[in-house]
Image 1 (cartoon, helix red, strand yellow):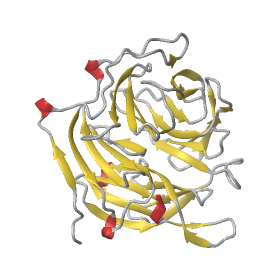
Image 2 (cartoon, rainbow, N blue to C red):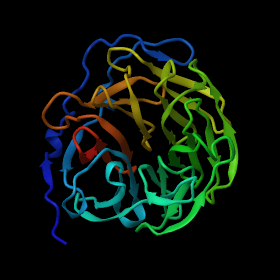
Image 3 (tube, rainbow, N blue to C red):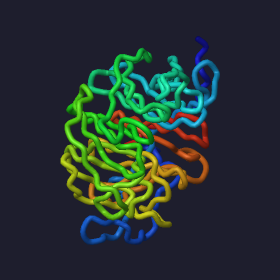
Image 4 (cartoon, one colour):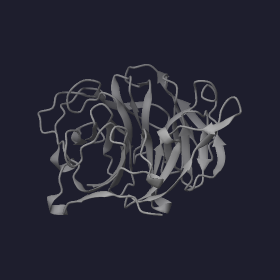
Length: 334
């Protein structure tokens, strides 16, 4: 296989920069978890980019068409991308080089098999790829090269019709966290074999309620962080039983706020990273919701164009996919 061209930018650690947009304004209030608090940039916790690799060619010379999901396969040292518009799940090395792909096939309610629209991906504790497809009402469990091994079907109301799985994440203990595809929201907690352990979530837009879940993540403390498009607070944090703990980021103009959040991850240092499709950036918060800085926006190194998903390997490497930029971006950030 001829290696794909990779655009690479390297920066020595002493000159590492805060990519593109570091917010240095006197931020207005936007945190909520009880009393509101002033949002101020914390230089000590601000993200600093050490190097970036940009891959804008998919496997076999194809393009990225509406890539909507990304995950790390630590066991195989690869980055997994849901290249939705081409019905593909693709594999890349940490150097950005293409390793292969498979076309994701699904069985519809009519029993007919067809090319799917893979939208969300995660890698479970057994090294299997979990694929959520917009045309399927189940989670497809695949081996690391796409052979379908099993299907996880959520209980009603997320088993048929407009229901089904949405964004998902895997906890360090192997539990699978899955959001409902329905706009009414809802979170399923599954064991490592896909058996339902718990289901919670009250529909609505007020703090502690869920509507149009765009992303889920697990904190080092075992809490569940949920990003929603239509709730008053874009990011909300719950305990494993679904009790609301705190939230931040109203849908409004200004730093620390959101337009269309569409991805979330939490790193081992408890920083919360949230991508925003309309603002073309990723904002970074401490566990309490204090804004630490941001990546993306504008032009130049670190600029983003409609980021749609993000993932971290927990060791300083991040992967971002962009529907507007039609690319995979790998970054080493501290």
